[in-house]
Image (cartoon, rainbow, N blue to C red):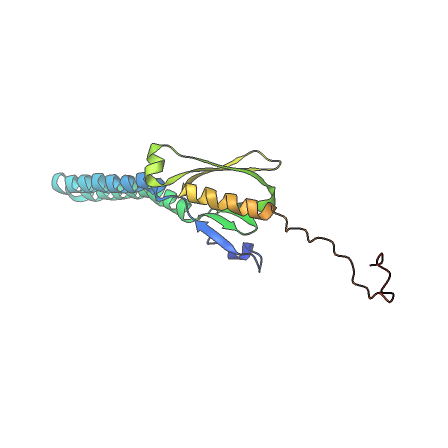
Length: 188
C-alpha cells in the first residue's frame, strides 16, 4: 500500500508524511547479515566435506533455510516499515499500515484533546519516540518509533490549537441610515 493520496480531500493540505524510524530495521539488518554469514559458512563446510548428492542436498537445505529466515526476519519487517504511513494534514491525522490487509485510522483535528510524547535515552539520541494522541471520547492511541517525535508533537499541537481557534467576532455595527432631520440625534 503506497501513500494514500486518494484518502485526502481535494483542498486538504499535507503537512507531514513519515514512515516509522529506521531503528526498527536494525535487528532485521543484523539478522540478514548473521544468517548470510552462517549460511555461507555452512555452504563452504558442505563443499569441502561432502561429495555428490549429499553436497547438493545439504546446499539446497541451507539455501532454503537461509531464504526462510531472511524472508521471515528481514524482508517482512522491512515491508511492514515501508507500508506504514504516519500523515498529518491541516484537518486530521492519518495512520495507514498493512500489505495484504490494510488498516487505517483517521483522527480529526477537532477531536484531539491531548498530545503527548515520550522517549528514553536511546530514543532521545536517535531522535525518535512514542507519540500519544488522546481524542475526545476514545482511549489514547500510541504510535511507536515516530521520527523526530518532539517536532511532530509540537507541529501536531499547533495544528490542534489552530483548528480549535475560532475567528474573532466582528463587533456589531449599526446600520448606516441617512437621517432626513438634522436635529434628530437619537436615530440611527
